[in-house]
Length: 381
Image 1 (cartoon, rainbow, N blue to C red):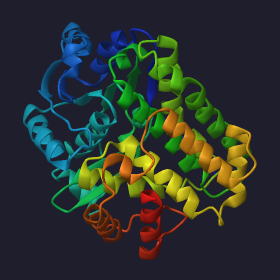
Image 2 (cartoon, one colour; image 1 turned 135 degrees about the horizontal axis):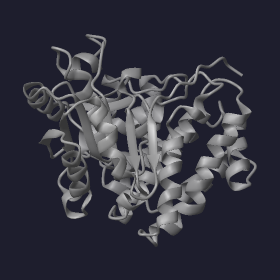
Image 3 (cartoon, rainbow, N blue to C red; image 1 turned 135 degrees about the vertical axis):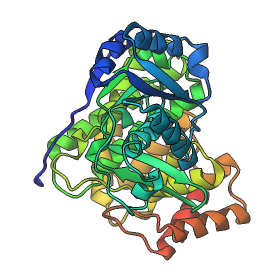
C-alpha cells in the first residue's frame, strides 16, 4: 500500500430539507454573495425560491449570474468574476449540477486575485486564496461537491482542462435527493455513468490497496443495483439518495487512499468529445471507457478480470468489458461514436487531431499518437 494523506474539509449536509441550513452556514462568511446557476430550471422546481429565502432570512445581499452551460466555459467565469468584484462579494453560492459547481470553484478562486481564471488553469499562475464556496446540488454525477477539482473549457485555445487545488474544496455542500427529482432519464443515466467512471479511474491507479478496491466495487455495485430501477422511477427518494451518495463518495478522495492517485486517461479522451461536439460528459465516458479497457486488456488483464469477478461474477477481462458495455446499454448510454452520430471520417479526423494536439492521456498509462488512433478505432468499432 502506498503512503497517503487524506484531507477533506467540506461539510456535507445530506437529506431532506437540508437547504434550510444554508443561510446560517453562509452568514458566517459575510453578507454579500454571488449566486450562480444554469439555465433557470431551479426557478421552475422551486429550489431558487428556497435558496433566496434563506439568504433573505439571514440578511445576505446577493447578485446573480445565470446561464452556466452544461460544459462550463471560461467566458462565463470571467464575466461573473467581474460582477462579483464590483459587488465585493464575500462568498460564492453555486446552485446546480457539476458544471455550475465547477464554475463556482473557478470563480471563487479568481475573484480575490487580479488575474483571469485561465491564468490558473494554464498554470501561468498559482492560486493563493479563494472565497468560500457553498453548493446546492441538483444533479448526482461529478462528485465535485466534495472535492478540490474543477474542469473548464476555453474555445479560444481549444482546450478543456482540469485544475486540482485544495483551495477549491467547497466549504459547505447541501445534498437533498429531492432536488434531483426533475432531472430527466437521460441525464440521470449520464450521472450514473459518471460515478462509475470516477470509481474506475481510482481502481486503475498505482498501488495495492485492497480496502480501497472494496470501496470502489461497492460504489459501482450501488450504481448497478439501483441505477436501472431509478431510471424507471425518477421520483423515488430512496433510489435518488443511494445514487447521490454513491456519486459523492466516488470522487471525494476516499477511493484513492493507498494508491498514487488514479488514471484519468478516459476523462481526457472524453473531454475532447465535449470540447468539439458538446457531447454530454457522461455520454463521452461510456464511449471512451470500453475502448480504453480493450486497449489495455493485455497490459492490465488480471486487474480487469479481478474487477469483473467482483462486479459481475465473471472470470476474464473480455467478459468484464462485455458486462460493463451491457450495463451501459441497460441505462441507455452510448458505447460507440456511431451512437451519437460522430462516426464519419471528418468527425473522427477532427477528434483525433484534437486528442493529439492536447496530448490526451492518463496519469500512469501514457498514450502516444498511435495509441490514440487505436483508441479512436475502438470507440468507433
